[in-house]
Image 1 (cartoon, rainbow, N blue to C red):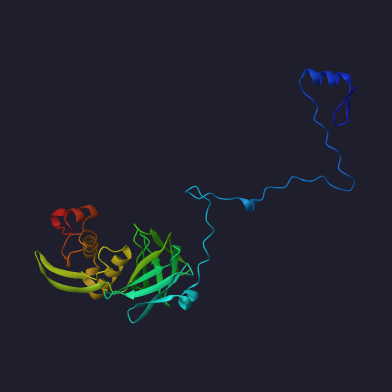
Image 2: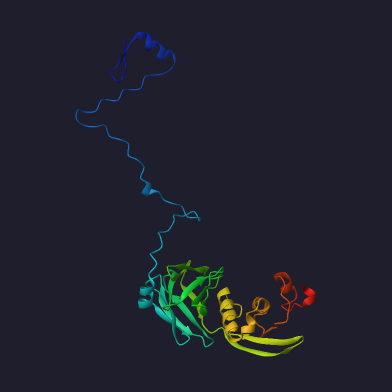
Amino acid sequence: MLRTAGGLVLPPTLALLLALAGCSPAPATPPAASGTAAPATPAPDATAVVTAAPDGGVAPAPAPRTPGAERVRADGAAVPGGDGVVAWVLPTDPAAEVAVEPQGDGSARVTLRTAQAAVTGASLAPAEGVTATVLEDGSAVLRHGDVVVAAVGTPDAAETPARWLEVEGVLVLRGRPAAVVEVLVGTSALASATWGEAEGGRSLAVAPAAWVRGGSLAAQEALAAQLAVAQPEAATATMRAQLWCHALGAPDKETWNLEPWRSEVGTGTLLATRCNPIDDDV
């Protein structure tokens, strides 16, 4: 007989077979003490999983809960526009300072500043009855019914890439941490619109506000909407297309001349004709 380390006794034949196979019997597990269960292997804790960030580091803590519109209006800085306040801005970083400076061109510059370079964003609550729509470039349009009352831009993409997100009626700015974040909120997009005669007929000379030139999609939308109110004939498809073309290709031109008689063409043709298509271009 062969006695194992665990105290088991094996018949000679079985012991010989195990020896020839190069195996040794596993030690037996001692029985659990009377009245107690053997300890179980703990199950993995699902809450302990750590997710790696795309840059290889550990993912940051979740962003704080977005404050509601009432809190932003109560604690935020007022942004003037039109005959009153168009919105309020509350920085994500409690230590950040907020400055709102009217620019004299129908816009106000909102500056968030902190010495800790921890400004990660802000929340903007429109005035009561005003809704916010975020556009493709991350800028946003504020509307009271069908009327565009303001355009909210985004910070300089080269400095602090960021965009607005709409969360339960509040605009939330998300981007990289920075010591200073500046955003333009424009309300008056149209400086003037005057009818005259051009090479082929009637022409509308449009002078946009300075903040609209080379601005965001929201700035262009605000200009188009306010121009259509001032000059309903400018709401046609060809006039709006010419307006968009000038905003894109001639932002520094003193006035943008739009002609209602010009043909409606595709984007490529519109750009190729320098915003002045004729019937032969169709």
